Image (cartoon, rainbow, N blue to C red; front, side, top):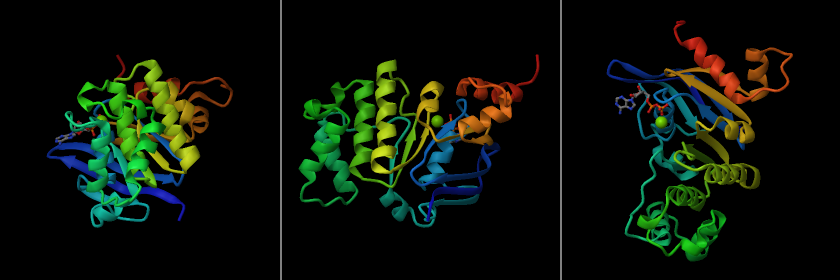
Length: 252
Ligand SMILES: Nc1ncnc2c1ncn2[C@@H]1O[C@H](COP(=O)(O)OP(=O)(O)O)[C@@H](O)[C@H]1O
Ligand SMILES: [Mg+2]
């Protein structure tokens, strides 16, 4: 099966607030999909439903063919998740945090020590792996979050604002890791970010959410043709995004 993520008519309502509204989405295996939208658009709510951490009000979800509501453990086994605010045990080292996560996930690998070292090395934290996480910077925490995702060796990685709070260099490095997940390991990546230039650099396709509704989805060049016209050769994702965004605002 070539579809990694599929939703149909997916909706989530919190009391009177519609957070996600009839979302139809398909993400192919191995693809990097950038999930865009202003704060409050419904991105995190969508992540939670895709992961089986929040129950949809209506509609269906499949992740690698599994229904996260009915088979949460099957989904958990094939996905990695970097939450919006990644949390670790502050008094434990990065190494011990990863060992703890491995045990929680039932990773019983005789070579666990070597595997933890390998993922720390991949995110550039091997030298600092024996430091307390309490002493880590924002960028180091985010990278440790990616190490945690790598440790699970997932088929799909869900990364909710992995570049939040990072400086330009940290953002660039993070996006390089994300690209590597897909290009080197064949992992499907579903991520949200406000760094539109970086999203444009690495995404195969993007989706734009506004007030719970997916207003556009596709390859960036296709959205550019639709929104900016066929003649425009040089475009940025930011321009395209702002067109959708402004169209939605009441005229002054
Ligand atoms: N647990 C919750 N209870 C009530 N409302 C919520 C809850 N989580 C999110 N919302 C609301 O749903 C909408 C979408 O939020 P969210 O999915 O966090 O957006 P995003 O991640 O795009 O910033 C917002 O209006 C938010 O206030
Ligand atoms: Mg969010």
